[in-house]
Length: 467
Image 1 (cartoon, one colour):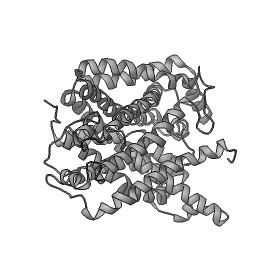
Image 2 (cartoon, rainbow, N blue to C red):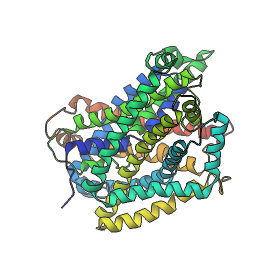
Image 3 (cartoon, rainbow, N blue to C red):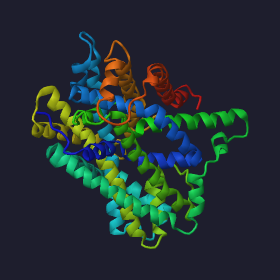
Image 4 (tube, rainbow, N blue to C red):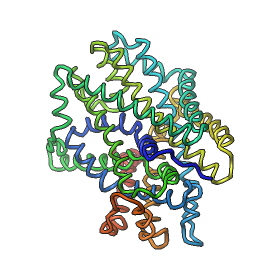
């Protein structure tokens, strides 16, 4: 008998936990800083509603209708003789690729939480924090140790089962995440000088989306911001590799899926917005550039916390929050991988966790070594091993996987829009808008293709010597 969630709250929190991750609390703040603050946030929210949300609903519908994960969901729903089920292997590879670098970056969060708790950043300026960060990356043994801790947590929780492990642990983790984040928000917005950061983050200045001395430069700035907002909206809810369809397979038909998806996307977005309420007031209060890029979390913020009263406490709480966000995604994706083996080959949960846990640990090693022993391994225009793995997932598997779910649910050669709509609207709650049929059939696929192509433009410019 297939396992089920113990409560509707468990489904919402675990699905939100899968979506809430480093894309919310690491990537969202620094790209918001780079593209001018509040105006970019509004752009992101628009694309979240019209771009990512429909595909999230479709993933849930495929999972719930089939009562299976991605390993067997297409087999159960596809027309006889079609080949949609072959996507399962791409989805499995995508889940593995994601975890091959995600476990390493999650290890950094655990490491920085430990460093903050031990007072390693006390008295350090940005240069001192950079030295600590660079020292971590250069030490393969320490990197492997923290990566293995992240893998071990994911395996241990998924091995305990859906209700006793994943649901129980994720509920505690998500409640704790929001509690810690709320405390950090209150502290950040009450800092002297935080008002300027709040204005940057909450008061839209659309002129910043068109920055540049010439019309060409202004258009380039705006188009870059649009593509960044579209990409962030798509990736923030973790659609495209079946990570959400597996949780759809664990729920009943009491509630319509549109309303559930809105709640989950809302929680996911709330965390991202609250992360900005921590970061931007703190940056402006201490004169730090908010568009500092990927180093904003690991280099800039520890030095900012160091300038606060009780900075060691705030730094530790911040990286505890970051660790919860990262681990919630690891647990959710691990469950997708474990369930794949259980559905596809009939393995027990115990065997699935043992085999996949070992494979995930071994396959995460290249990312770790890519920062030290194999530091010279790079692809021009992409970067090191971690960047290569991230590029394969974020710029390829996720958008193309999202396109597969979208076409499967809207075309006659797939499951079909009527069958999808019947499943999505089963139960009580918000209905999926029938009038959106043309939009999800023609416009949304075109937007996904645009995001896919846009991801290759900067790389091709480097390869062709144009950038």
